[in-house]
Length: 551
Image (cartoon, rainbow, N blue to C red; front, side, top):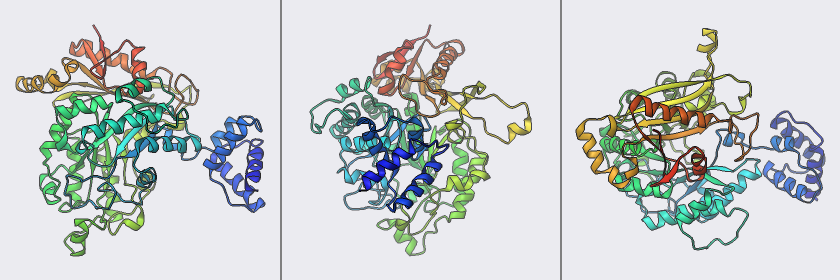
């Protein structure tokens, strides 16, 4: 009975022009109220809509598809993000703030959305990826370009055979989506990566989580063979005394070394930071952020800021119960983030997350704000990448210019190129608005090419022995065009994707490396699914990098 009514709802909706998804939600609510039926989700309606199109009961209606789009922000950065969890394991860390739950990866909780999806799929990577692609598509999202994030803690701690199998299954899930039901097929990582270069669902970026003290030249080589392009480091703080109090198990020197090695291998780096740790204070938390971008030993590309929470089944919970620990309040955390955003964050950083998706019932104490970004939006003039992404505001007649920012990082030179809005003629207007960001590129002149002779010797004997192609090469660590995700090979006036901005940035990077630094080779840490794009620009695959002679 309800299905017939839902079909009538869709038929009626095809005859209505919706200016915004909220209009469709209002239409759906009113229809279901008159029909005296529960409101279906947009995902369920989308599934029925596709079935009706296949059966030729209705014609495809792109305006309706747009109106049914749920959680539109998920693909407004130009990629579809898919997060998967590794299996539970015996974590090597003893951190006081981490909860320990049975049959759940340490530091995670069974009622977190990503964990619930992983449990439902028995932590199988193939099923996790395919179910997530399906969910995104049912909510109206394009999934051609996938940014895969592997969660679960210290990925480096797993045996190498598990790592390789897990990533191979993620690639196979993308390659076989809607094509195969064989979930136990024997394959190899190399085979699935090769298939993914031309797959409908391409993994254009792969992120792995690990600890700073697990990063060395051997692990960097392993990560590149897996196809990793970005590493999320559990830094938590950059003060040794706080690390020791929280039983983190490594010093700040491990973070500094890992950051340099990863940058000199071309990786993008995302720091996980935890304000409010046991032994810290409000001033020290602020100093941590200030030092990140004043000390060239750090300078991460991205941040995930997770305030310290008191969770049961953790050592911190027992300290809190004894009165030995006082967590941040909502107001403390809000004021800190406003101050950091307004006074510290440079334009070449992306604040990826501000709070962790921990369900309210699991938080015993600490900040409980779940929508902090929205709450403080009017109080900040943050220049971070996420705050400036063009998203749905792009117009084909927008005037854009090329901008450049140089800064020192881990012994090397970082050059941040970006296409942004042309500056306004009115200084007052310019001061009160952010420049919209259309595309960016991170070019690195590694420490081995500009550092002291002793540092050069160290580089020669370590990293370049593992990855010879990086020797004497400039590195493109990231190329990203923002805006609505557009399918591979297509163009659309409402998005800056596929209009040549990435190509122009790469040409500018080649020119800078050649003319300013006398470098004759560029290596790109390309995602597997983007290799064909670089081949069209003259790059060739070598040692898991896309490489080109530029003189």
